[in-house]
Length: 83
Image (cartoon, rainbow, N blue to C red; front, side):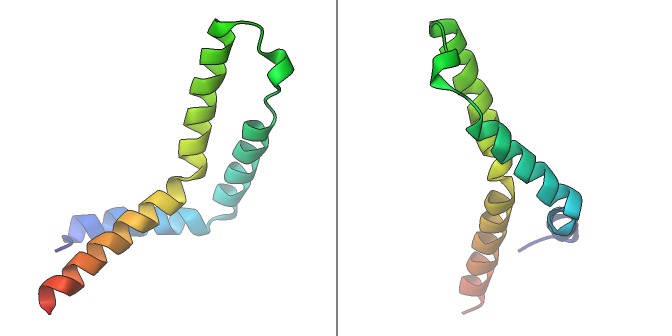
């Protein structure tokens, strides 16, 4: 069962996700993610750097969906417990 603190945790994120600044940030992150060019990767070190940067960008881009998915999973588990 979600505690009051858990509810507040998720509500703060849900409020953030509704903010225009969040939408703008995600849009900018998507632009950055797609701006990498294969031609600019000169060696293995640069490749590893780009892979790491893209991994972080992808986590941030999908953060909203991840939070919502975890929250829904918790709610479904709670509903199943009450049956």
